[in-house]
Image (tube, rainbow, N blue to C red; front, top):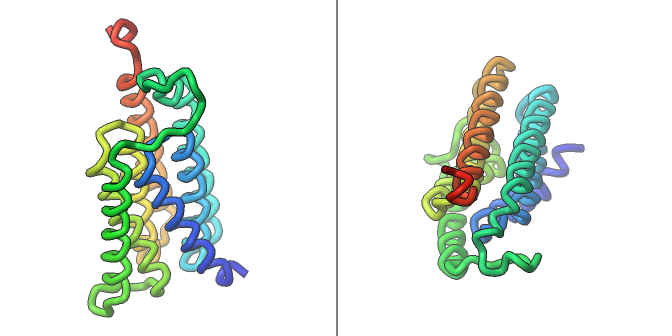
Length: 205
């Protein structure tokens, strides 16, 4: 049953990563991040035990909750935005560049995943594409973002792509637990830095 969901999960993964790269609105990005974790778990189920998938889903849920609580405490960064008084979603000023970079990196990931000499061992072609997409777009998001939350999201994407590859080689529960602890630690650091980033200067002092 899960095998039949590979193609929809891969499409959902790409849509979630595209939103995370193209947009910078916390509210949309948190929903996209939750979708990314769900799609990545479905793909991960093709190569590892269900216990590992359950741990990944739980960790993903905790990360989204941590970042959502941080967003709520900092008013989702809208206090520093000129449209703070409204609730509409905003489009970043570099949106066209982000879309162009997203397209180029996605094409590069697709080309690399379809080269037999560059394929990651232990993964099918679909999972190769998912892993390269996550790592490539994660690095892109890190390069485009200086704001802690969006940079942190890029780091989660990069770690997710690495995990797809690594779990095919070493699906040990000890490794799963270690990587889960790393991700939760990253979430706490991102939450702390985002709080400092958006905190008014008088409160920070």
